[in-house]
Length: 510
Image (tube, rainbow, N blue to C red; front, side, top):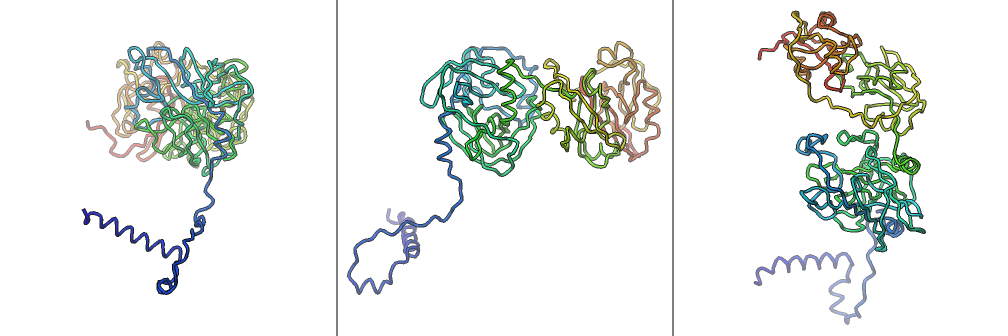
C-alpha cells in the first residue's frame, strides 16, 4: 500500500517545490534563525492569458429570446426510391439535426412513421414571431413553443419554405424579448460566433467557435439557393433552428445542418445566412410562400480538361450546359457553351456562386449577366423568370438503355457509335425535332473513361449541333490523338459537357 502511494507523494512533493519557486519563499536559513511569522495569504496570481472572449453577457442578454420547438409530426409514407440521396450512398452528407431514437429528435410513431420533432427557434419580434427550420415543423399537426421562462404556447405556422429551410411561426404573446438581426454579408472567416440551442434535448446549451467559410453550397438537399455559413461551432441534433450570433449578440444565421458520416458533430456545421432567412420571412408574411427568380440555365464546373477543350483561359466561371426553353436566359440569347463570369457586376468564380445570387431576387427582376463566348466577353440583359417549384432537376447519374435501332456503320476517332433518333424517340426524351443523336455503342477507351454510356444523347460537338450519326462522325473525323473534344450530352433530363481526349492506341479490347 505504501509503495503504491509513492508516485503520488513524489508528485505532490514536486508540486510543492514548483509552488515554492513560483511564490519566491524567503531563504531557508533565515527561517530557522527567526521566529515563525503569522501565516499570510499570498496575492492572487495575475492573468497569464488575456484577450480570450467572454460570452457571459451576450448569453444573458440574448438567451431569453431562444425557444424550444416541439412539433407533432403526421405519420406519412415516403417511398425509398423517392428520396434523392441515401446516407449509405453518400457517406459524408449534410445532415439535419434531428432523427429517430435519441433525445431531442423525433420519436417514432406507429410503424416507425410520424412522432415528435424537437428543435430550437428564436423570437424575432416582440409580438410573437418565431423563426426556425422548415424541417423541424414539416408535416406537423401541432407545434408548441416553450419560452425560457417555462411558458408554453401553441404556435401557428405562418409559412414554411423547403428550399431555404426556413419556417415562420406566430404565438399569441406580446412584449417578448427578441433577437436583433445582423448583416450576414459582412461575415468573414475567422470571426467568433456563438450558437444557442437544445442539443439532445439539453435546453439552452451554448457553444462557440469561428466562421470557417462563407457561401458554401449544399449539393445534396436541393438548397442551391442558400449560401451557407460554415463554422466549427459544436452543433448537434436538437440545435436545428437555433440562432448563430456574432459578438454583438446579433443573429447572423440559423443553424441548420452538419457535415457528418456518423450523424453527430464532426467539426463542420452550417447555418442559413440571416439575410436569406429574412428575405423568406417577408414573403411568408405577405403571401405564405417564397418565390425565387430563375435564370434558366443548366451549369457545370469548369475543370482543366474542359478549359482545354473549349479554349478557355482558365477554369473560372460557370459553364452553361443547357438553357431552359421559355426562360429569361433563352429569351436573352444565352447559349450552351457560354461561360458565365459575372452577375450584376459581381464576379462569378465557380458554379456554386450563381444560384444564391439569382434566388435572392424575385421573378421579373432585370439583371445583367456577363458571358464569355468564343473568347469575347459580353453583357447580356436578362429578365428573371419564376422558378418552377414542380420541376425537379435530375442528376447526371444514369442513362436509359435504348433498343439498337438504326446504327452508324462507320466509326470515328473517339470510338462512339451513333444511333439516329426518330420523332418518337425525341418526344420521349424531351428533345426538339431534329435534335441530338443517340449513343448505341462505345468502342473507345477515352470515351468510356470520360463516363459516356450507351443510351446517352449527344446534342453537340463543341458548339456545333448534331442530329444524326453521320453528322456526329463528320464533326469528329478530324480529331487527333491528344486533342480534347467537348461533347454536349443529355442523360435523362440532365445536360452537361463531357471532355474526351483520345489516345493513339484508343481502342476497347474488352
